[in-house]
Length: 414
Ligand code: ADP
Ligand code: MG
Image (tube, rainbow, N blue to C red; front, top):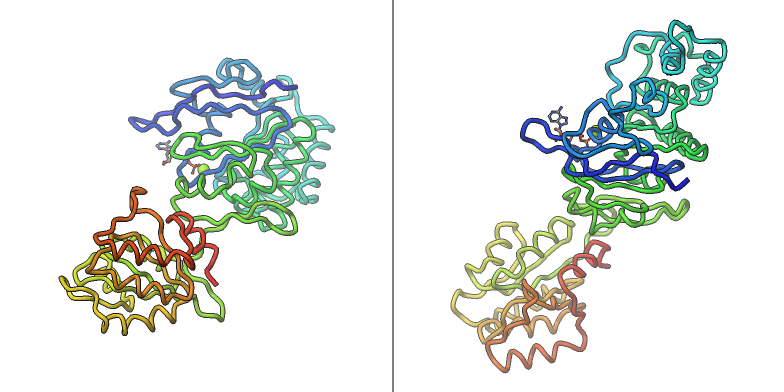
């Protein structure tokens, strides 16, 4: 029972000089529902085509119950593995019943026509997917969703122990999508195995026992949905920022892309950024991306932070290039900080020239101090008074590193 139904051992697939599948080793047992996830072009379809045998690996081995796939005759393969292609737009003009009976061909002896029981199987499968009465309809005259259901019914008729499904519900509405995956799950109870490329991570989390996350032809990570659907793992692969939550009624994980702007009646919180020496560049971009309202300062003229604020039209205050921050600069800046819901003191060196910023920070309604410099280096002070003033900020401030700050901003500052 613990034996692998299908296994790949360091399978690679090259087209010309391009490596599309790169040393993938996976194992799937009977009774498992495995989701292949990953961005467009990750290699999901190619891996499925390798598993059905329409493509041959350029390296490594594929074993179907410990036998090399390529050594298993086509007819036997077709009795054991079925495949639903992503591509359902090019279809043959055949009546639905004929399509379903094609699923029985691998089981028919030479010159034998399908029997009454084959036809009965086809009818039952059609009813099972909710298309009873479609027997005489022509496949090419059905909607995309109906075609997908017919082709799924064909796989059911094929009664294989392994089902490979490539984005099988791309044309289905949510009700039929749910039905489809429920039906596929049902099959795993009969000790069949299903491997499905699933675009929608929320669907994948809901129905799959295990997920394999592909990235550029490799396995980035695999495991139970809660082990894979983690922002730290998803973000580098999908090259975006995700927010993972749990559906309160089903308990399933829900993956969303972090919103750029939040909609709602209340305006976004106002965040004041105290920067300098380019320490606020990344943070400013992130705040813009998340849709926060921002003010900045006081940085010096020609400072990288100051230039970015100007370019992004962030209200900000500037001190002269080589002068200290003066009392009159501060008088103008205090209202900005006092109006802000949150003030963030970035990690830049502090000395006589910009010590005034610590006075500014003291006026914050809520102050976050970014703990460490770019590479985790301690903050630099150019004067003992700057160091002492910084130390005295400590009591009311929240210290955090950039990552934690991003999480806070992502979750929403109230
Ligand atoms: P996915 O299904 O995850 O979106 P695919 O397996 O379809 O990804 O494709 C993986 C990569 O391989 C893509 O970059 C795609 O352009 C490339 N690719 C797929 N098939 C071929 C082919 N026959 N010739 C050249 N490149 C291909
Ligand atoms: Mg694909």
